[in-house]
Image (cartoon, rainbow, N blue to C red):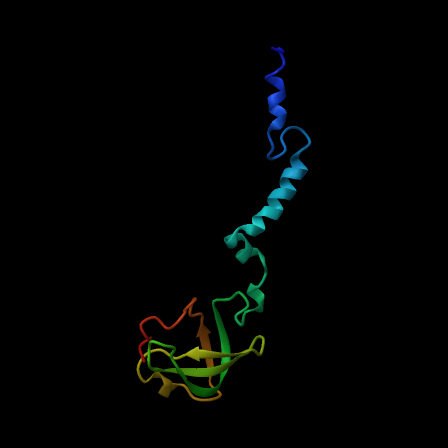
Length: 129
């Protein structure tokens, strides 16, 4: 048996580079692989500014019209909404008016403060109103 036989087995391994002068390689590989992570990708893609609120929780707007939006299956309702044009970027959105009869307090050309609704698939269990 060759006394160095065990030494040659170490070269068969693959994987990340190790040792001195590998810092740049490790950093660039990590930077590329981070984009496979869904949470990292969502927070770093920069799509937040394309949304109507542009990264904010609230936004002011002018009421254009009152509309009733029918809910998706399997629910059956007419959601009381208003079409609002945001002041800061001119984008038009449909804003939900909560609670029973609150649509009577909102008129056209009113200035309203719109709050984010969160990510809602259907309005869960039907929003009241």
